[in-house]
Length: 433
Ligand SMILES: *[C@@H]1O[C@H](CO)[C@@H](O)[C@H](O)[C@H]1NC(C)=O
Ligand SMILES: [Zn+2]
Image (cartoon, rainbow, N blue to C red; front, side):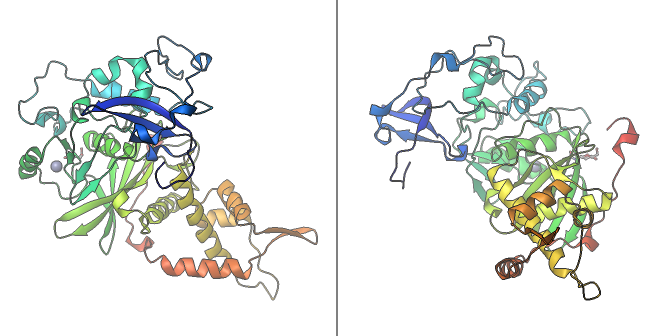
């Protein structure tokens, strides 16, 4: 790994030759996959090479869902002691598999082919989806290797260039391009700047579809129904998958709502991030996937998305929790949000008749819509719970109080509940989404 003294273990997933130079695609064991990269041979210590152990691979010829397909023709060597856990995006992949291989008889247009105009722009209610060539999915045994490697070099989205972190099932013929162009409003993907420019003369969208349910200053939120705006929702998932590694939930966008956060300027409403949410959740999930696009990260937008998700839960009169597992960055954001939200409440408590203020876990949960389990884990994480003279008390040390006040001064982006115009629907009564 560059800028490191140590030589971490890495698994070689693929080898290619570029102008007669061998390049190796490596995954650093115990590091996040977003650090995976193509490296030259001089960055490998070949003396420590280990080959994959035969028994580590369980051949399941037909690759049933849930089982990991074998990789018989893997030309890879492992220099790690353990094989990394199997990728978890199988069912995500199946969703795209199921929905993308459609309209087989349709002729591709010569110029901007692959992103066939009428297929992506369907406004006639026919659920069309971005097409995917069979080649990516025809060879199942190859899937797990394919889906473990970044396949898109660069995405141009409005005025941003994004470097994907993970695999995303865009059509395979587009993965060889140096840059994939996206319409920043409808998220349609195009293979060249020329195709994008032609698209922009026809695309009059300047904001995500769906209803704008929140606006304060330049920040807006749009609610998109995954059934009504299927193409947009699928294009959003494709883009999001470039930066999300672990979720397996997109069998279909129909059961989901998508909340897209935008920032407004004279050109339009530019996407900053989003979260998806099941229309009906039996497990109190109020967020399925959540993402702040890289150019907007580390600026408080992630916490704003999280805050918004809990404001929706408050209107619904429910407590909620994000779907697990959370990514490493997701967990950091949630921990920080939960800590600040709970500390805000604790520090606002007034003494009760000169007695110590009192509050129950349930009350904290009801006020914040944060699920009880998450309240408890946060109190434990902050190490606030003490047992004193026969009862549990929360002790706020000066360090905690000062740290909290400093953090809150930096948190200038906040959701204003007065600006939220949202009526929850009871999806269970509709029979059908
Ligand atoms: C989104 O769905 C609505 C309702 O079906 C439809 O009127 C609108 O044209 C769709 N927008 C896009 C961009 O697909
Ligand atoms: Zn467009």
